[in-house]
Image (cartoon, rainbow, N blue to C red):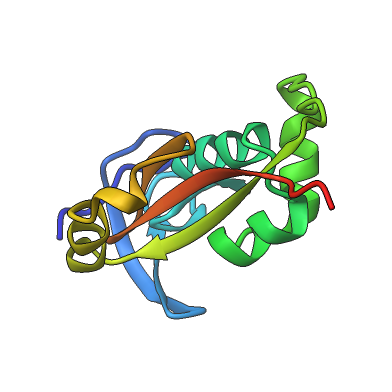
Length: 140
C-alpha cells in the first residue's frame, strides 16, 4: 500500500502510527498531525457522502441509509442541509432495496419477470451492488 499525503499540510513524509478502530493510523513528520486512511481530517470520504445523498433522493429514510452505509443518520441529515437537497415528493410508489453480490445480481437480472413492471436503479456499494426498485402501493 502506498503511503498517503498529509490531509492537513499535503506533506509526503508520513509514518505509521498504530491502528485505531481497525484502521491504519499515520502521523505527518512536518506538522505532527495524526490521520487515518479513509478520513480526511474530520470529514468522511466523499464516496459515502455521494451514496448517502443518492439514496436520500431515491426516497430511502435517514435511518435506513445509516444501516446500509454504516454512516450516522445525523451526518446524512447534515449533508442534506449542507447541499440543500430537497426531500422527494410523496407519490403512490415507494422504493425497496436489496444489497446483492455480483453473482446474485447476475442471477436476478437473467430472470425476465424481475425486470418488468417497475423502475430500477443499480449502484455500486463497496464490493456489492444495491438494487433499488419502485413498487406501487396496493389500493385496497
